[in-house]
Image 1 (cartoon, helix red, strand yellow):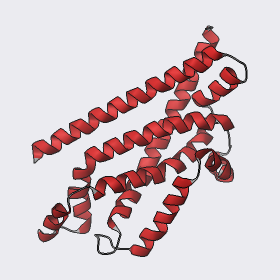
Image 2: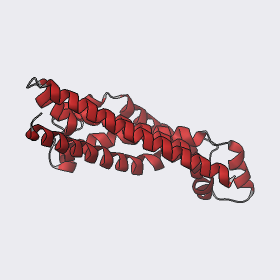
Image 3: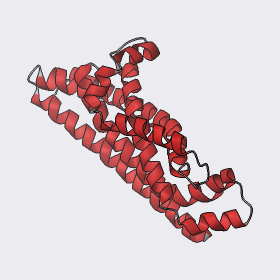
Length: 222
């Protein structure tokens, strides 16, 4: 493999890491509070707002059920509005974030709903406000599950980042399509696959380790 191709792989890997890192961060910033609200806004819950819960739930479900490659094409005008272009790494971050936000929201919602209801009732009995219950009971108890959820979301984004290369999104997916497929360079395609596997394994290992550490800390505090 020539030095030029190696440089292309390194550059594409960096682009993929940037796309995934930024979109995962933005998706978490948007999806975490959305997930908390979805988990606490049904009738009779901490922030009871059944209508808002239903509307947001429909929007989240609609976004999640849309195939990613179709989502990328469907929001091209929105992507151009935010990024100024519809191709390249910066443009790819927009659909990746749009796809990540509802996915993370549902994962966070599920993690929070796994917290024992008795802990919420005990906090209520002690006079804690709904916000205090969320910040001091629900989120700390759900942290290990949330860490695993964010790990899963990040791994999914790595796959999405490769997929967005099909429409000029840059990164390893774009490199694999332009060189590995269109120019019949199987060594480049193999290198792209290997790098993606390494990235996924690294993210999964870090996420699992963080979740175990958070779980041990919670048990120690208990």
